[in-house]
Image 1 (cartoon, rainbow, N blue to C red):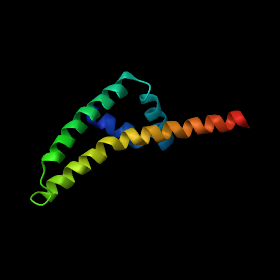
Image 2: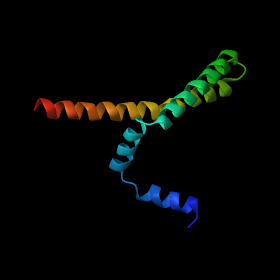
Image 3: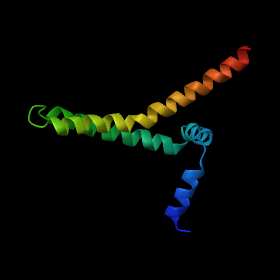
Image 4: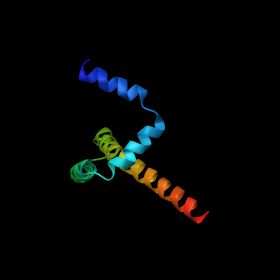
Length: 96
């Protein structure tokens, strides 16, 4: 089985709960720190690009760059939300 086929099979078999658990576990790794660092570097580049784009001459370029920034931070926000959700569940169980 090719690597791509194997990944497709794992992807299609993954349940939502498993995905959320793995995403929360990712946040405790050096890989996550590397992702965050890359996002900050790319965000800085996107901000520089935004400041140089003329919104009247290149509205499409402006919109693309804004979309890139939104997309870069989506996974970060989702993982933070999942972690907060887990912490709230633990707090609720402890207080019960």
